[in-house]
Amino acid sequence: MRLLLTAHRYWPALGGTERAAEDLAKALVARGHEVTVATSDEQGAPETEEREGVRIRRFTLQRRGRFRFPPAAYRRFVLDRAWDGVNLIGQRIWSTDFLYPHMRRFRVRPLFTAHGLYQRHMERTPVIDPLYYRVVLPRALRHAVAVADTQLEAEELRELGAPDVRLVPLGIDASELAHLPAGFRARHGLPTDEPILLYVGGFYPNKRVDRLVRVAAETGALLVVAGKDQDPARGHPFCEALAKETGARVRFLGAIPREDVLSAFRECTLFVLASDFEGFGLVLLEAMAAGLPFVSTPAGVAPDLARHGAGRIAPPEGLAAEVRALLADPTGRAAMAARGKAAVAQYAWGEVARRYEEIFEEVARA
Figure 1 (cartoon, rainbow, N blue to C red):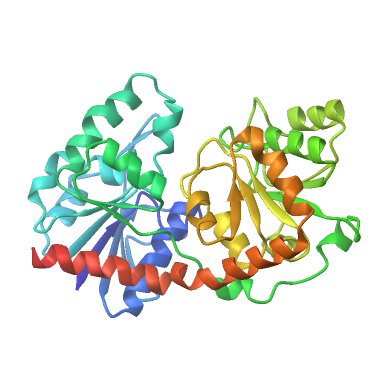
Figure 2 (figure 1 turned 90 degrees about the horizontal axis):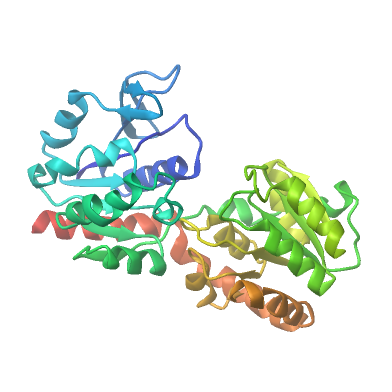
């Protein structure tokens, strides 16, 4: 099949959504499809190129303040060619939003992959965001097959009026997590004879690292926090002061190399997440693949993974109790780790691509 994926950015951009688009494109190529990605220009990258079997077409955008607008050539490229399947990746971004008025022009119904409706929860622009999620997006969804990463996202899409919603999770390359390096505790001077709670992901407003500090205070467990400080209200300085105030034992490591993250998965006891909301929460899937049980609020993919027995979910006020129970139950943690690793195969990118392929073929037949 001749498949088109649209993405607001693509390689060499290295964000989470960009990486997911790249991994899906490569997995579809591996299944024998001709895949093209339409995306924005990147400094130093050519207008057209082929990378690992994926054809990339970049368009120079017009920038007006913080907004970006595609040229007319982008719409012609997407709408006027005989694609057998189209996947619009992401929402509240130029590559998808500027196609909404033209949804009826597609030769086949496009797939729409939201990759998280987090801006709906944030309402960073109090007038535009409500209008977008209450009027613009619901109208567009009438003409698409909506693909949700998580059960929670599927429910949100149905609430927005999507008539056809499919559930296909994000994927993972589990080979990276099959042989985890050692030495994390030794490198950071962490104790070798006690449990450690791990959080990797940085300080973002939705992540609520302050809740994890309180969990550490309530349980007496050592918490290790890794990631950038991106939250002016409840970031590193706030959480460090909170740890001193509550007596919590917390080590703030800042951003750490990928190898160090993998080593942390191996040597820590529980992964903890206290987010208000998540787009997906890929780090939980990585922890599961590494054999590290988790305790999380019911955000993103956490409830889906917990159904495999890989972790437990609780409301914010119940996190400490779940952590305390699991720290006292090494046999239960070992069983959760085994169940999580056994379930990873269904999240391999090859399996994810196969499920997308089935939807593309169904839409093409219709």
